[in-house]
Image 1 (cartoon, rainbow, N blue to C red):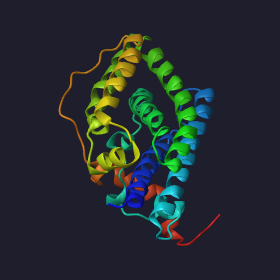
Image 2 (spheres, one colour):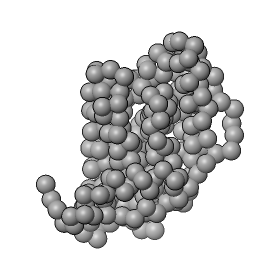
Image 3 (cartoon, rainbow, N blue to C red):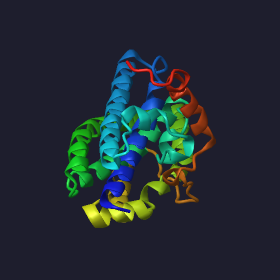
Length: 252
C-alpha cells in the first residue's frame, strides 16, 4: 500500500469506531436512568460523531477518490466498515453500556495518546483533539462502573456479568493486522502489544475500585477490522443509513 492509502484506510477505521459507538450512544437518548446522565450521554455521542467526521474527511482527502464524510459514513456496504466488534454490541441494560464504554475508552485513550506523536500531522492533530474529549468520557464511565460495582448486590452482580460477557470482544483491540503494521512502520503508529500492557493496568485499576473481578482470558471474537461483523451490525447500519438511501443526494 502507498503511504496515502495507509493513511486513508487507517483514518477510516478510526472514523468507523467513533461513528458506530456514537450511533449506539445516540440510541440511549431517552433511556438513561437520570436526566443529567441523559444530557451527558447525548453530548458524548456528539463528540464521537464529531471525531468520525474529522477522520472521514481526512480519509477522503488521502484517498483522493472524491468521497466526503457523508459518503464514507452512510454509503458504504456493511463489509467495508472496519470498526471493532466491541463498539457495535447492543446497549442492553445500563451496566452493559457502561462496561462497553470503559473497555473501549481505556483502549482508545491510550491509542490516541500514541497517535498524537505519530509522524503524520493530519492524524496527530485529530488525535490530540479527540484525546481531550475521551479522557473526560473515560472518567465519567469509570465513575459509573465504580458506582454500579460497589453499589447494591444486584447492581454488582449485573455489571460483573456485563464485564464477563463483553470481555471476549477485547482481544481484537490488540491483534495487529497488516494495516496496523504498516501504520507503525511508516508513521510511528501504535505498537498494540505494548498498548495492551497499559490497557490492562488501567482497566484493572477501575475494576478493582468497583469491587469487581477481571474475567479470565478466553476465546476472543474478531473480524470487525476485516469487515466481518456480528449479527447486530446490519440492523444498526440499516437504521443509520435509512435517510441517505431513501433520499439519495439529500443535503442539510
